[in-house]
Image (tube, rainbow, N blue to C red; front, side, top):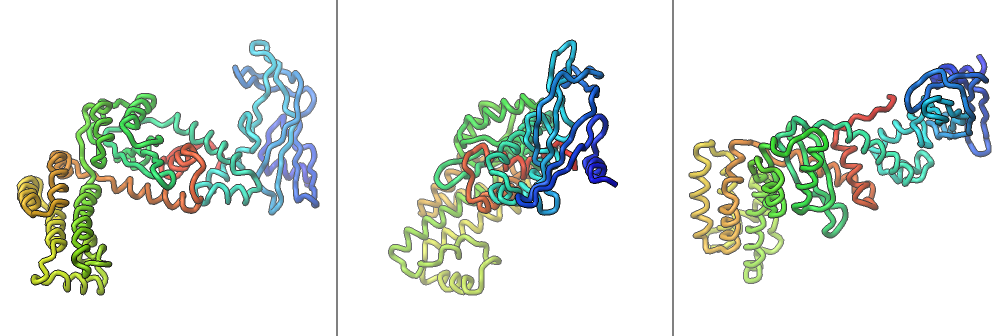
Length: 405
């Protein structure tokens, strides 16, 4: 079998395309596969699809292909323009690459697969391409795949933000709880992010008025955005964010008391962890500091926290009664941080209790955020919000790419 016939079969080329020549450059470690077509071949118009069009003229093009062993491989072809009587001369679409791309479809499929496992800069070094070219490839496929997303069944949504880099540069994520995937990501974390989400929902056969449940933190921006642009949604305030408010209050009590009580130094995580999760040395320290004679304010704040945590184990018909009793205790504790935390809970009362009906929380979002942060750490950050958003869709969007496997 000739080498041209072998590569013809390996590439799966069909008439009129045929491998005309194969060249190997050992010095540059490069394989070039030349593709041509016989004189008099007929082609289809890439615009209207009319078949049996003669070749008007042709131009030489080249595409990067998957490596041949450890050597870079390229396809080069004389690509004709079809002489369509309706559309005029149009460059024929080749079956091995998309129009305008410098890569073959198989190479692009490989890049998309590997991009989910490693940083783009490292991938660029692996395949011998600049990472900006790979980002353009990823942007194209992610944008095309998102155009096909159907959000008509979206009724339960979670929203949260993730940092793009150090400081206050954020990207907001919107997750479909039923599909368990990111359906929208946008720069910022203000009320306009919800407006952009509602517009994107409409653009993908969804309806903002059909969204019945929203889970988020107590950010005023998210609350205002939801009230304006998702008018029929009921709030469930994420219980992990609710607990964070209580934990922050306990830590505030500890930091203030530590100024007069040095024994509280290095005890921060003793008060923020659950008793069963404490190390042996932390359990011993907790027991030592909880002695009644010390009368530490931090211990009182800690018990208020533990009591609040029992809220989530209450049956639906007892939850509000339990929360009212806790609120009375916290607001009469004479611990200002705990009083402030209790009043924050009071202002968001119905959203906190809504969890007992909806049973939704941002655990899915926290898991996605962990994936994103891990990818960001491997990549040592992203140069732009668009790159980060593309990676979020790639990792957590469950997009369908029209590529060979």
